[in-house]
Length: 74
Image (cartoon, helix red, strand yellow):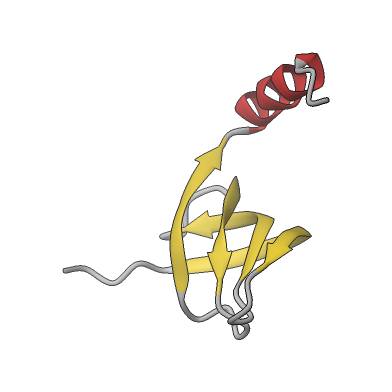
């Protein structure tokens, strides 16, 4: 299996933290030297290991924001 290269170009924020210290974060990440995308996934404390996640373009993230703003979460 090929090695995946990544660089967190901007740490935007932590969404939650597990009892084991892993954090679910929103970051701007460059995968395999491509243009950075917005990324939500869990990371170990050193940011060396990661869980499965999802990436978004700027337009997709704007649409997600709009959808979340339309939701009634009460």
